[in-house]
Every structure is written in structure tokens, then in C-alpha cells.
Length: 510
Image (cartoon, rainbow, N blue to C red):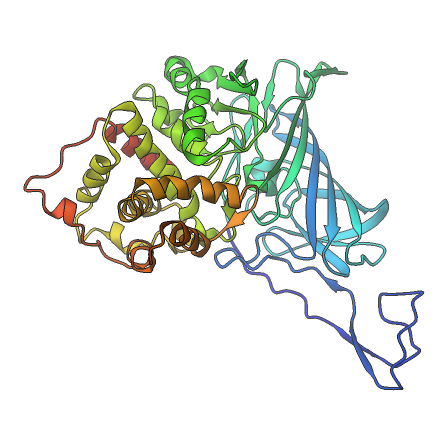
């Protein structure tokens, strides 16, 4: 599914004084007493951002500010047609640039001029504009396309889930490829307008708020419009299309809450509602720990029985698979996914190897929620989690701080990741620990972060050297020695929260 692409070789052009510089028509070269001057001709943007795990994800040469995604979808055929308008700024002189995309492209225009396009690698759309693009230039890129996403595969895989009554565009670390062209890496966040035309009677739920109610269109169709004005990583944009009951409300502060429940849930429906309807309560509680909620709306989507098997922190409105409700209400997964609104969504990874900053923190939020609910302190959950993995278990061989591309969602990233944060809490004390968390979300709000930056922040606030702690728990194979757990004469008692936490992590670590 993943492939490394080789960036185009840079071309150098030698010019002498008085000749025109390549790519700068109409500008005279500076005089240089006759000495040769080396200039760099406009080059193709890199076909990837060089992520350690996924080098070909994202693209170089431009920065996106906004996506306007306008779609038409037919559930009966899974046919998707669309026009996506991308507003961006060139970060270098460009002769060509890439977009991450898979569907068939009908046309591409750059600043109104028709551009040529071709495909390369596993998911690259190479765009060659009619005119050279200069650094700092504002770009309006319009891509028209069509296809059947569920039949569009990369190594026999699709990130698009077709269901009996619609579809889910929900996945991590990639999902945009199947429904809109993008710069698909968390380093390039943007705002979104998403509008989708579907047969009347079909609902569409997406990120943010509805700037206006659904609009009737010709042919017994309805267009749904969603907007998010907060910077959003491309994998956190989503669509849920199908038969949904939509429940709207406001928080005490007036923020909109939109929850949606697939009508296919049947007997699972009440448990889903009993969980997701507590979102505003949980977000309010988490705001007291992590800092002000970073987005313009909140809520959740309970997907259909034939949809996804996991849950994802899609921005402003997590999407949950039906498995989380099979044993009744589960507020732990709601606490987990909404903690991601701070850790993963607002503060995103700078590279995917830093995934602990997402999953370890969201998992520890479940432990804190367990304390809040009186179902087991974080220390009790730590002791039981630690004891549940024998020293010779493969679990201890996965490094949460650098798990590898094939283990980004390994259970160790969740459980050992949460254990790491608990050890940090014990090392620095509660006062410093609960100062570190909101300081992190404030300093990197709407941006990106690394584990090294988090460690530096923790050391600055606590005044302690924490290198040994982070090295041991995040980057060293084997089960660390823990005196508090080792002193126990008998195995620790199972906290009341453990069954729900364990069940959630089994589904989340996909």
C-alpha cells in the first residue's frame, strides 16, 4: 500500500551576465563582471514530504490553505463525481507538482489555465501547469474527477467503506486519496468546505458546522453542506453517507453539537446513544484537564453495522464502529476519541513515528476518566495493565516512541503509551503533570509536534532530567522494572473500568 517515490533531479542552469535567468522572463540578470552565475531552474515539487515511515505521503512545493470539495454520490452504484478547488501558496518555483489522489481525473486547471496531468507511483497525480509557478504565488487548483472508490485499490486495499445504504470515508493514516485530491500529510493542514449531493432521503454528515440547511436539487436530490474553519489534517476530514438519525443541540456555552446514529444499528442503538450523547459532558471535563476545546463544534457518528470496525477521531465529530456498543454503553471510547481533538487533531504529529503523542495521550485520558467515574484510579489501571503483559510477551518488544510503519497502531502504542504518561506523572508530581498537558496543547495549537519537543516541555516545567524515563518507556525493548507493581504480594485487582478499556483498545489498535 505504501511506496517511496524518487524526487525529480534538480536542474541547474549556467548563465552569464546580461542573459535572462531561467524561469524569470522579463527580468535581467544582475551584472557580475562577466563571471558565470549559477541559478536553479523551476523544479517539480517533491512527490512526498519525507516522512520517516511514509516518505511519499504529502507533497512538496506548496502549502494548502483551503479545500472546497463539491461532490455527487449515488449509493446504488457507489459512483462519485467531484470538483475540488484547492487554494494554496507555492513555497518554491515550480515546473510541476503532485497531489495525492486515486480516482480518474477529467481535467485540472491552475489559476484558470488548463494543466496537463499524469499518474505516478501508488497514489500520485502529477500536475504540469501551462505556466511556471513562482515562489509565493497564490494558486487556485481545480480538479474534476469521477470513479467508484470501493473498486479503486492500492495493493488490494481501499480506504473507502461502501455500506448497504451509503459509504464511509473514514480511515488513518490515509483516506483522502479516494474522494478528494490533497496534500495528504498532517504537516499541511487546511480549512474545508464539503458539499455532497445525494438522493433525497439520504443523509450526509461531515466536519464542523452546517452553514445552511440541506438544499433541494433537481432530480429528487438534496445537497448537504458542511464547513470547518479550523486547520484540519486531510485524514481527519470525513464523510458518513447513508440513513442516519441526526440529533442536534448546543452546549451551555452555545457551541453546536451534532450526533448521528445509523438506522441499521437496531438493538445497538440505545447503547450508542447512551455513550455518544455524553460527548458534551466529556468534552467539558477534558477541557478542564487539557485546556480550552480547540474547535467550533463537537459530536459523534455511530456508523452502520456493515461499516468500519474501529473508531477514528475525525475532527469535531468522531466516527465509531458498531463493535463498541455490543456490550452496552461505552463512554471510554468517547473519552478516547475526544481526547484526540487535542492530541492528534489540534496538535498533530510532525511525523507518523510520533504516533505516541496521539494514542498514548488518548489512552491515558481513559485512565483519567476511570478515576473521574470512580471505576479505578489511574494507578490501579496502570498496575493491572502492567501485570496483564508477562515479561516475555511480544508486547514489550514494540517501542511506542518508534513502533515502525507496520505497527503504528500496535496495542503497545496504546497501553505502554499510557503507562509512559503515568510514569511521567509519578516522576514530576500531579501539579507539574497537569500543567504540562495544557501547556503542550496551547504551545502547539493547530500545529504539529514531536516527542522530543514534548520531553523538552516536560523537563522545562518540572525542572527534571527526564531522558532516562522517556528512553526506558518509549525507546527500549523489554518490560521496565516498576517497584510499585513488583512489591505487590498478589496480582492486582481488576478495576471496574478494565473490561471497557480493554474492549476499546482491541478494536482501536487495528
